Length: 83
Image 1 (tube, rainbow, N blue to C red):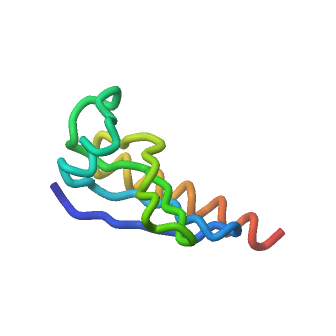
Image 2 (cartoon, rainbow, N blue to C red):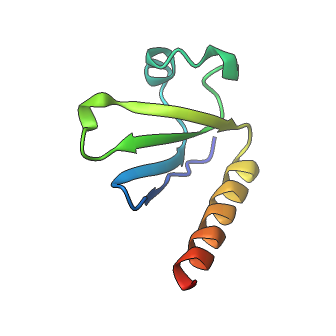
């Protein structure tokens, strides 16, 4: 699996990330509804409370899908920042 790690800080201090997760992190989050621990996960981190862990929001099944999500987010962020 190609490594992709993308994180962007949101206005409220949280971060949104797209990256692979370890099997342990996947199991700690009980994300079984998303299949297995393979793929790229979209998750949120609260920078103000790192001990609270992550919240998995979704999954991109392939590298190409993960890159597309990052592209969409980056385009939206650029549009929002310029408005």
